[in-house]
Amino acid sequence: MDIFLRGMKEVFNPKRIWEELKSLDLNEKLLLSFMIFSVFLAFIFDKNGSGGLLGFVTGVFTIVNLILIARGKLTNYLWGIGSCVSWLAVAVNNMLIGDIVSQTFHLLMQFIGIYAWQKVMEHASTTEIEPKKLSRKAAVLSFVGAIVLYFAMVYFSIKAGGNLVWLSSAILPASIIAQFLMTYGYSSQWIFWLTVNIINIIIWSIRLAEGGSSALSMLVLNSMMFINSLYGIYVWYAIRDKMKRILNKKG
Image (cartoon, rainbow, N blue to C red; front, side, top):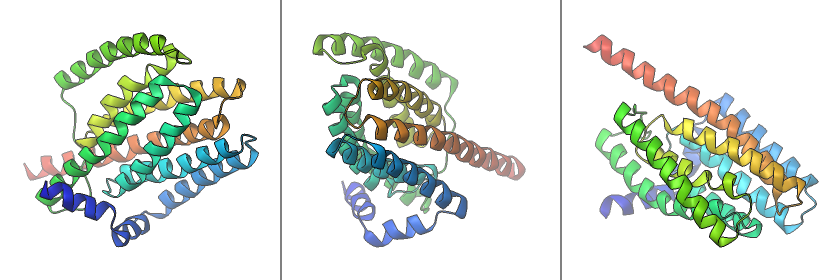
């Protein structure tokens, strides 16, 4: 409990929030600015009024969250909590059952993640999470678990009368696996996030054609998240490979 409370204190510490944003390098700041500007343009052209504003707010929180995750920064959870709350509201407005359940799950996992990351950082005396490699056995179990969860979600979504059931149901299993991998510092998380992004791009393209709430903002946001996932793959795998080479030299 003490570790969690210290983690919460750090996540909501204005000084640390500002310092970790400042620590981004020039390329990351340019990427962050580009993604936020893209979401802002979507908001300007979105004719959905308050729905468009909600999509924009979701976009800002999500984009900052993802950039900080890519850098392994603890304060990503502040932005993650804001992202989950606002995204949940958007999902409710669009009756996307898979999204509603997955964002509720993500919101709960933010607090577990705060504990897990704070514990690792205190143990290693560092301010950034170092990427780990997922074992083959864990990878197989993750895939099988995702398949089982997918069909369970399809059944639940059909019963609940959700929209785009077969697509939106895939979000939850992929998101659950990605969130657990992210919480415990595995670089494989980005493969699952990339899958979630692609599915969401398809979903929000359809919702945009149907005139769905916040659809334009969410489509642009998920496109930016796709770009960020590619960046996350590069950063986390590059860092992991660099660490491996260093350890091999020491050995």
